[in-house]
Structures are given as structure tokens and as C-alpha cells.
Length: 86
Length: 232
Image 1 (spheres, chains in turn green, cyan):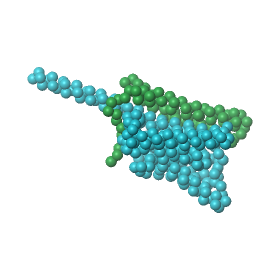
Image 2 (tube, rainbow over the protein chains, first blue to last red):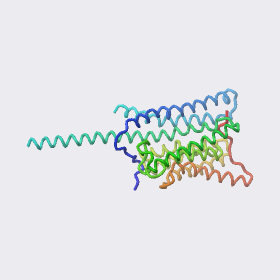
Image 3 (cartoon, one colour):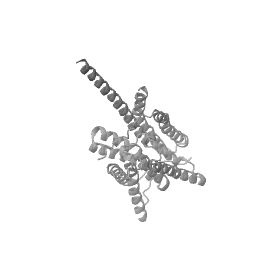
Image 4 (cartoon, rainbow over the protein chains, first blue to last red):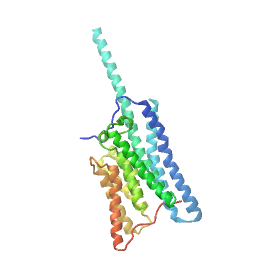
């Protein structure tokens, strides 16, 4: 029976690979934040400031993307900090 | 006597070293676990696709770009499974993904299908389910068990459908949300060896809502609400 939570273990800890993943982390964290900020900005200028409610969906999605990402970014960053200390 | 003592110390040293290595491996597993979760939530950024201008050349370009990325990923996975690229070059792979395409391929294919072929009113909640409900269900399942995870997951999925369809009439809103959330949870809960839950959680609710929409269109009723994201 397969164990779903088990990961493939590398015979040797590839430092180069880990470093690449650590470098990739800022991209995973920053892009969703930028996207949500862009959506909020668009909602504000095209919708809110002109009194058009058609763009309210952008604000809702921006909040979902921002909140959802922050929720998982915090433990991810914590795990990265713990890893980098080792 | 002294020799026995030395042997015991040496044995203890080896055990300690093994424990240290085990700790290091565990920390990498833990990091891989959160890495996978963040990869899911990151994918919500692809919703920016709907904000791109509606001009024909941009539509063609973004369609080709989406398909191109999926084709590239397919080639990469083919080479990995065939052993041309070593598994160790991929971070956070699970054991059962060693001999079959990894989850991110299924995720990417489903995302691409939804973005290119489905109306955004159907695609957006399905993508949100895969991006946020899937990791939330995973975390709750790990902490509180399967049953609670799927119940909470159902309400989280339903919230995404309610938010996306909020401009629809209340009976339609409730029907679409209940059907969509149920299908998403079934897609997540039902495990297949070949088809990953990252694919099912997106495509199953999308197909059900598409059938509902098209079925009612035959009766002259258009249930699709207004679009959430408008091109710039």
C-alpha cells in the first residue's frame, strides 16, 4: 500500500538542489502578492473610484489570493528558516 | 571490560549519527511538504490570465503559451519517468510519483484545460478549490482525520462557488455551489493510481457545472452569472 505522505528520499542531500529550491521560494511567495495587489489596484481605479460595482469581483478574488497565500506562506517561511539554520 | 565499554561508546556514537541523519532527512521532508502546499496556493496567480487584454493576437498568444508550458512539462516528465533525468533533480516528489507523472503535471493540465476551454465563471471556483481547498483538506486530514477534513473542505469549496456566483439568482447560486463543492470534494477524496486528485478536484466540478449550464441552455435559461475578472 502506498504511503501518500512519504517523499522520495535522496541518497545524499544535494545541497545544490536545495539551494535552487531556496532561491525559487521568493518567486512562489512574491508573485501571488503582486497579483493580488494588481487586482486591488485595478478594482480601485476602474471600479471603486468611479462607483462601478462590476469590478467588485476583482477585490474579492484579490483578498482570497492574498489571504490563502499568507496562510501557507508563514509555515513555509518558518520551515525554510529552520532548514537554513541547519 | 574496558574493551566492552569502548565498543558500547562506539555503538552509541553510530546511533547518534544515524539519528542526526534521520533528523536532517525529516527536516527536508517537512520542507517539501510546505513547498508542495505553497506551490498549490501560488497557482492562484494564474487567474491573471483573465485580466490580459481581449485582442485577438493576445488571445492566441496566451492560449499557445498555456499549451506550450503543458507540453514542456509533459516532455520533462516523460524524460524523468524514462530515467533520462534523475528523480533527485525534482524536489518534493512522493514515492508513488516515481513511476507515474507527478501531481504538478495533472495540476497544470487541468489548469490549462479550464483556462482555455471553460468560461471563467466555471473555471475560477474550480481553480480556487485546487489552489486552496486541496492544501486545507490535506492539512486538516493530517491533524483531525479524514471525515472532518472533507466536511470542512466541502464548506471551503462551497464558499468559493458562492463568491464566484454571487451575482446569480439565489436558487441557481445554491444549486451551483452545492453541486460544485460536492464534486470538488469527491474529486479530492477519490484516489486513483493514474489520475491524480489535483486533476479531479478541478475537472469534475467543472464538467458537472458545464453540463448543468448547457442542459439549461437547451431550455432557454442561461445560468452563468457576470464575469468576475474583466480584461484590462
